[in-house]
Image 1 (cartoon, helix red, strand yellow):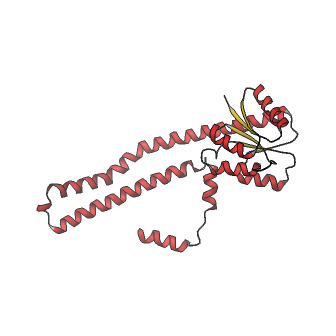
Image 2 (image 1 turned 90 degrees about the vertical axis):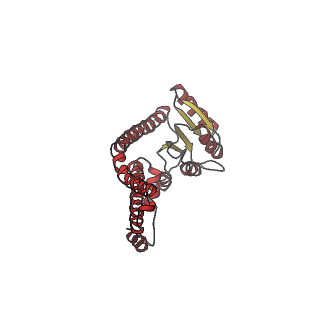
Image 3 (image 1 turned 120 degrees about the vertical axis):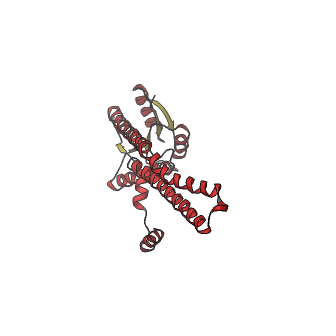
Length: 233
């Protein structure tokens, strides 16, 4: 059963929302303030959160900020309730990661429509994520063994020669084998790093919080960073 967390300090609104959702087959849990709501979200992992903005102590923006900072709660769909949402407030909520706004007062039908829309979008994203994972898994199974075997064979062959006859090898031959092992290990290390990066990039579009962090990342030492990479190559 779909679990929905309602965070609302007004008991009348909170009970009305809970009753409306329960009558439509949703499981509801509730909190009367922001701090309690954050704790319940961490403990209960709801499928959707409906949260008022104006609350004493930790307001709705604070709740959303806390949840989006935690990987365990960062992707939970989040609907704000508000009685006076200006454009600036809506923009602030969207920048923090809110999925929707529901202005007060609202009807039971409007509440259910907003909930269904958010849950449907989340289900679509989950399907896309699973498809992406299946595609990624197939690519790795298909190509990774061959890519890894080439440098691994170089390491094993060089080590085997050193192990079986070190006393029969000339110093320059030992150096040559060590170089082969080193270069093969470097290639193997780079392949693993590339596949890890490929995995991250392939799933990044489905992780809005990570994508936002990546887009906001900046360095003032661009030339130095490029030079360091070029020297390593």
